[in-house]
Amino acid sequence: MDKPNKGYDYKRYRDLLAEATDESKRRAFIDLLIEEGARDQLTRERISQLGLTTKPERSRGGE
Image (tube, rainbow, N blue to C red; front, side, top):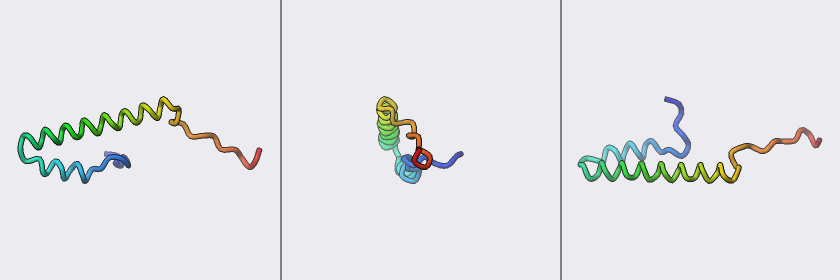
């Protein structure tokens, strides 16, 4: 696998998964993953709509 994303907390999710010892806790964990994934996707869409996905060009030495 590549390097983890900055916003993705692997340790937290790994710990939550280890604590999911019964069906209700596993379902709650899955719901959390879906909710946080949807929130992250919505944030990416909003950033894209605002046009903040490209870096501004830098001028070269006061041209």
